[in-house]
Image (cartoon, rainbow, N blue to C red; front, side, top):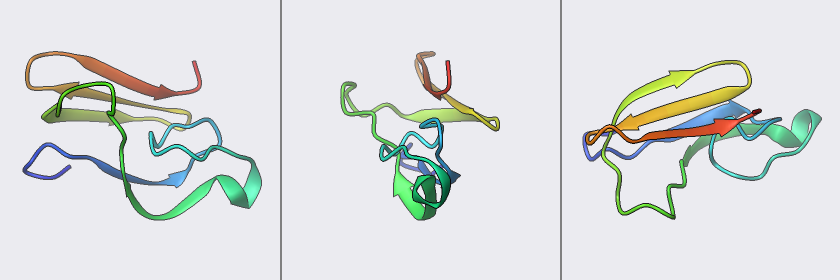
Length: 72
């Protein structure tokens, strides 16, 4: 997480849990370098908290909105 509230993620993205798009399977699903998490439908959320699991990620912004990505 950056001071500006932007979030970058990388790692296994089988279920879209990185929030960076390009889901797939096997080696194709792994994101090897940091990518900006896409919050395209929201006006510049200032992310304050992050929680990550093996198949999900969750983000909370400075006004209390919860954003999630991944498997269900």
